[in-house]
Image (spheres, rainbow, N blue to C red):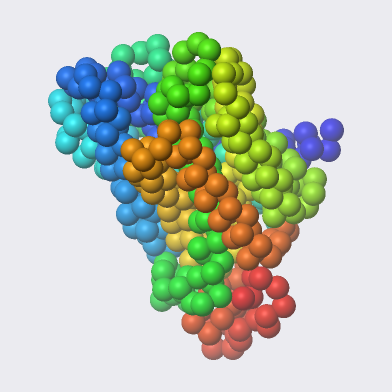
Length: 432
């Protein structure tokens, strides 16, 4: 009952609009994986090897666009404001989706996905930063959980829509949803912490994240998220190729794998957010998720002759386990000061998404040398191992006050004037 009341207390317009924006964001990201085979066949590709290689090329183009866009939009969000980035990013990826419906070859397809990724890069970071800075510190985790859970429903919607609509119509639907969402952006206000933040000359200064201790934390945040996009980028998207050599009874399709996996991700985001609140710990919630997910990965890739229904069930369970996205982006927002918070919270998720380029490319390379399941297990072991190691580099951030700034001298309170404020003493990870 208390958790229900807490959820109701954070369901304001800012949280709902941010969640709907993330819904459209993930709808677009997921849609390509669902329509990949059908769209490439419609463009004239028939050889399975060519469909796989072209599919990876287009997927990587989208992810590279997200990495580039993450840096651009993140800096703009700290310099110009969270709302302006949310508006610009949605407009760009909506237009890219609409144009995507009219591509005629693989290069133009890849170009559209690059610009789509460029636009998609700004949505989540700006939204999470705005929500985190707008809610009381005890409830910000619930707010970001609502955003992430609504967003994950976009994956479910894409997995369903992508299978019932022609691929071109599905892209048009995603673009039109984004255009409609723009009107809701005019009804929400900018973050008060951003408006009140001093030291404008340091806003969006990416180099503040590269100071030795801050760089360690920044890289750790990225590595913690890598297993999520290994799972969606390899296990879900290439499920047909993975299960082909495992003697699975029945057909496994990418669309159904993404559908069941995304249902798990949605429940996982909600569950991990609640678990984090109950444990009053971000780190413990993520650690439990990583260990459980890796155990299920071993079953998925090492146990032969499972039925397709069992594979879908395992996919659903893995989705639940790696659905700690809400906790991750909340952790990132809590690690860094107001003047670079959006830069960190926008770039980290997009570098995580971009890590799928390395995961899929490594998988494709190893697949030529060994069985697909062995290749996926090797890449997955590296991803999960690095994530657990990175988690040990972060201190707990649950309930941290976000009213602080980053400077070359250290971490400073935003309440102090630029003439009198001094670096905070290093008493916790916020001051490292």
